[in-house]
Amino acid sequence: MIDPVSLRTYRKTKGPLGNRLHNSIRWDQGSFKQYGRRCAFLADSGLCDLYSDGGPGMLCKTCRTYPRHIEEFEGVREISLCISCIEAARIVLGRREPVRFLDFEREGEEDYGDFDFLLYTKLTDARELAVRILQDRSHPLSERASMALALAHDLQSRIRKNRLYAADQLLERYGSAGAGERFAGRTAGFGAGLKQRYRGFFSLTEELGRLEALNSGWPGRLAGLRNALYGSGEEAYGRICREFAGDLMGAADGDWDIWGEQLWVYFVFTYFCGAVYDGRAYPRMKFAAACVLLIRELAMGTWALQGGRLDFDGFVDIAHRFSREVEHSDENREALLALLEREERFGLETMLSLIISGDFQKLKNLS
Image 1 (cartoon, rainbow, N blue to C red):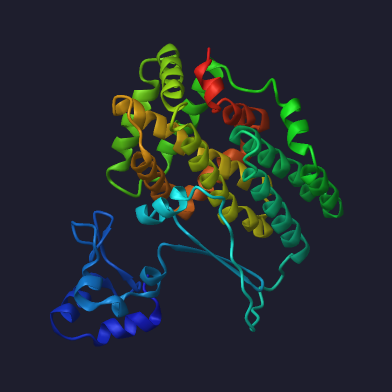
Image 2: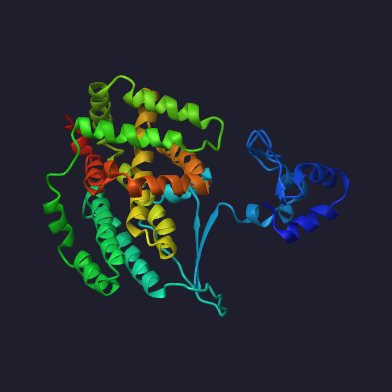
């Protein structure tokens, strides 16, 4: 979509670029025309002809902003990078140190009407704690991620019962010294067996395939990955998991968990506090979990398709392709969120089992 200021500029542009603009814009809707789901100015090279021919000043607000993702709350604007851009994905996933968030203040207020500031405060406190848990590298990522999901589950019960006054006690318990060890002890028996893991990921990837495809090559790519993973049945899938874990447990082991941590923090930071508008804190954390699980599962499929090879660029590629399909469609995001919220087959125990079974040692011994 084109903002009004840019639309006026495009109307006044003369010469060959002006002629192309006139023929490439749906003036009644204020948007660029698309051909095969590609913007009329998107060249075969993947570059923008409007930028190349007119310079950066010709970009509309949407194109100037991307790949920045913006979430707005009362008095707060959060800006992050969107990994649907492959270069942004390299930046986000290529960091070895834990992500830090920068903030600053300036004068000015915006009225968001009936904004639940108390709920927003508890959500931001919970998100801050969840990120701290996710970045505590003294524990395996599977334990950290499970704990973040359980935190959101317990917070949701307090939101549902209108007991936000009890949220502080909950956060204190999850953030206390030794909480990670206690949680790991309680979930020590978790972890999906071969049948449960196969069925869980078969189902998740099947639902992913039912979403609207935004890029013409995605359905075929997803079908190929699903066939590589599940096409030969449970036993073959188990061999893939074990061989994948054995192959990556060496030099790539630390990288795999770092990539996973950055993905978890990315999805939690971007979407969790949106629960202030719909009250769905736990479903949003499950959405983050499902996105990370799916990207890592499809990365394993990429490894299988490529004859046992997966490097950083391969992981970045599948992450950015997934993001393009899910994050750039309001309908797709909502469909996945609603599915995770209502379907019992994606309940807490199932999601915890899938997360914990992704630990390399459990994958290597999957049976």
